Image (tube, rainbow, N blue to C red):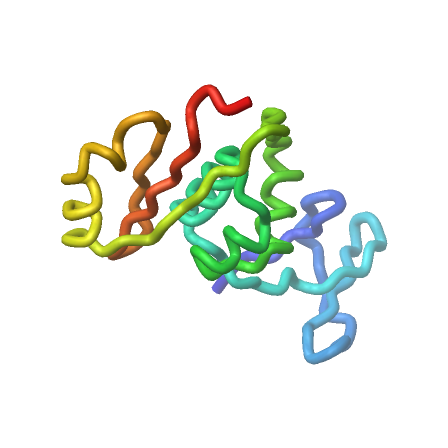
Length: 139
């Protein structure tokens, strides 16, 4: 059983004090503070948080990232605010991206024309790979 403590004073002198919205309400006798137990939310793996922030820094929008990794654009926006991520200004270009399976990526990279004149990053997304590409020295 989890030991419940008061979120205000960390006291352990608690008594049950009713039920609010199907959650147990408690009263801390030390500081006379009413509270309910924390609701457990859905926890998203840190891997996806990191990938979302990387893609954001590469210039993708919140909704584009949402479509790629399947996490709400609101969650991505909250992570950017939480970690105080500042996107460097890229006024003259917007990167393009493609999703490949392993064998498709190998075939794509075999062509030298695909590799010259552009910067690119390849990142893993589950069982697929994402290639982010932008033109170098673009005015």
